[in-house]
Length: 140
Image (cartoon, rainbow, N blue to C red; front, side, top):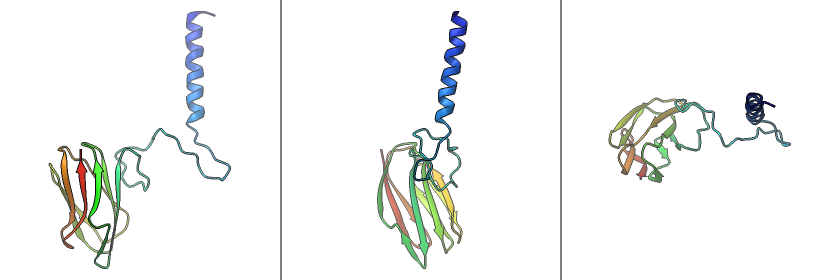
């Protein structure tokens, strides 16, 4: 076998091995097997399952009550942070970070807002109309 055919064979085997692992698959219980590699587009924050490299906070606003309230969370600098909001009221989600972020919340379910924090420290995330702190994120 020549060096060239050995290289081609090696590439073929590698591609075949990788392709076999990318198919997902069904377990015996009928649920899809998970993979440690993420194929989710990082800019797609509407997916209800965020990759493991993101902090995800689910927020519910109903009848003037906010869940969670005063949640204590941790993140790292430049880590994507996603707030998924279901709301029955209009409000403004304000992130007191450097730089600051503000998002208009509509009275509807399934809203997602993603941001990163560039400077370490404590970051409050508040709802302005309801005057509630949803979370304080310690960014390291």
